[in-house]
Length: 299
Image (tube, rainbow, N blue to C red; front, side, top):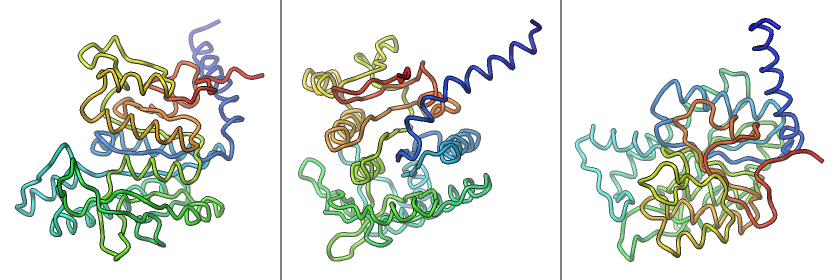
């Protein structure tokens, strides 16, 4: 067999490997939290959008929830304001909120444009639209961090309606409180709340790290699969810290509220979503409930 023919057979094998995953997750909702370097690098951005569009075209029901922290910081600096953070959370005063909403709206429509270019109908919405995301004011260790919201209610009917009409929803993490004030929402929090509300089959976080490490200083300690009880023990024993702590807590909350599995992926890896969802090898860290298996080997 010549080398060219073997390459074609290898490609066919990849497609066959993907088949049981396509069958299992057909018509299932998958929430993708899109952020980090994958939003800044144009090549990575294109690949992420290609991945999500492919998921849509093979029968999945993806929802994108995007961040924009780096872009917000850039524009806050451009207008002569100094970004402030308390306990890792952006302090959002009224002026910063105005900039953040404009920047997130720009990012949102850019993603819509990329999806539409690939022939899939997308609709970009804010958490303010139709009361999609209703929030309470969020404090950080008891400290006021301005117009930062904690999601308390998701109007999932809006998302169900868009999915039913064959649109790909792209959600901007801005919401309103009961007095209709505008709040910025951490994109991880928004994605988690939405995944819980729609009982998503999968929630995938695209990040700037490979996954969860037992020792963050040792890349060999990457954990490929975690049960909820194991994740809770890692946190209780002090192995998880920094920005991973709230992210992992979000993952656990999602699992405990009906999401079947959560994936933490390195968005800097080209087509990481496809590798995780469609292959037996997978990448990153999968967080599962006590009954789930990461891989599907058929009946």
